[in-house]
Image (cartoon, rainbow, N blue to C red):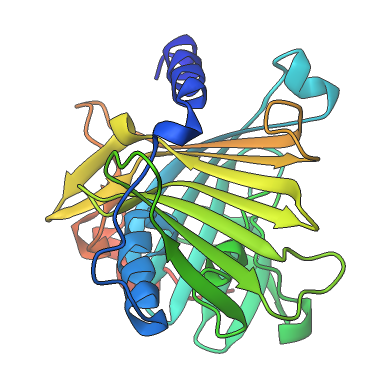
Length: 277
C-alpha cells in the first residue's frame, strides 16, 4: 500500500466534522440488544474472530520516532481455531518468537517458523497478557465494549448520516483503566469506524477503521487496515502508534482466510501448527 495515499485518507477521515456524524438507534432499546449489535459488528475486526488465518504487516513508532517517521516494521501470522491460537512473529524485533494458546494452556516459544514452535515454556494465567508484543494493540480493549461491568447506551445524533454512536460507562474502573468508551459504527455495513477510550474525561487511546479498506469475504465485511494511537488528550499528538495492514499475495488478494484450512501456506501442516518441541 502507498503510505502517502494512506496518510491522505487518514487526514480526510480526521477532518470530517463530528457533528455531521449520526445514526438512529432504532430498535436498540435495551442493554441486551445493544450488546448483541456490538458483538456482531466487532466480527468485522479480523483479529477478534474465533477462527481465521491472517498475515499482518505492522508498523509501530513511539515518541520522537513518530514525528520523524521512523517506524519499526513487523510481520505476523495469526492463526485462530476456536480454543487454539498462535501468533508467529516472522519479521521484526520479536522474530522468531511465537505465542501459542492450546485450550487453557499458553506457551511462549523463542524458536519458531510458520509451522514449528520450539524452545517453548508454559506460563501461568497470571502471566498472560492481551497486548500484542511490540504494539499497543490490546485484545482486551474490545472485550470492554461488551463487559457486564459497564452501562451501555445508544445515542441519536443531531444530523444522522448513517453512523451509530454507542457509549460505555465502566461502573468500577481502576485509576489506570478506562472509565468511558465511545464507539462509532457505520450502519450500512454494521462495522466499527472509531473507538475512543477515556480516563477521567481525558482521551487515552483511539482505534480507527477506514471505510475504504473494508472488504467483503464470505458475506462478512472485514477490516484490512487498523490504526491504534495511545494519546494524552489529543489524537494528533500521540505517544505511540500502531498501523496494522492485512497483507496481499502476488495476485493482489488479501491473505485473510476465515477458514484456516483454505490457507494454501498451512493447509498441509494445519494439524501440527499447535504442536511444540
